[in-house]
Image (cartoon, rainbow over all chains, first blue to last red; front, side, top):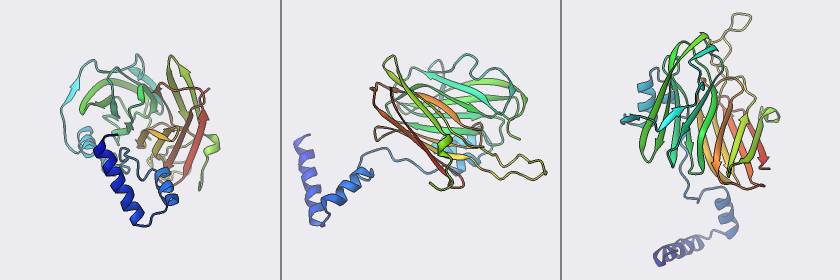
Length: 167
Length: 107
C-alpha cells in the first residue's frame, strides 16, 4: 500500500466513523460486496436479446460496432459444433483460444429468431475452452466472439441442421 | 428460493493439469415461447437469463442467456490454478424469477 493510498484509506475510514457507521455494518457491506472494487455486472441486456440480426445484437450488446478480427486467435473445436447436426435442439459448441485475459465470450446463431445465444463476462481466472449446448433453428452460421484486451476476435462455422431446434 | 428446482442442478469441479475444470448441468425447460403443446397452445416463454459462478466468494463468471441455450443448460469452463477444497458455487435466475443454486468442493 502506498502512502497516498494509506492516507486515502484513513480518510475514508474517518469519514465512515464520522458518519457513525458501526464496524458491524461495515463488515456486512464488505461481505455483501458493496465495497469491493469488482467489475460491475450489468442487467440482462434485453435489447441485445430482442435484436433480430447479428449486427443489431452486437451493437446493442457492445454499445458500438468495433472491428472484429478473424484469425486463429479464436477457434471452434473440431466437430463442436459439427458441420451437420441431426437435431438442432441441442448442438454442442466448444470455443478454444490461447488469448490471455479474456473478458467476454459471445455466441450467436445468424439465422435464429434470436441470434444472440449468450454473452458471458469472465473474470481473469477463467480460461478456455468454454463449452455449452445451443439451439439452431435452420442451416446457419454459428459465430463465437471473444473480447480480450479490448479487442474482438471471432470465428464462424456453418452448421446444417435436419430438425430445427427453435420451434 | 421461490419455485426453485435446484435439487436437480448438477455441478462438478476437478483439478486437471493445474487447472480447475468446472462442469454445470441445470434442470430447466428453456421454453422459447414459439413451441405449441399437444393442445396447439403456445407454451409460454420460460428461460434462464442469468447464471453466475463463484470460486471461494470471488465471482469468476457472469453469463447472460437467451432462449437459444439448449434445454437443461450445460456448460463447462476452466479456472486457472485452484486447490483441493476450493468451493465452486453457481446461481441462476430465469425470466419468471425462479432461482436455483448448486455448490461443490474441488476434490
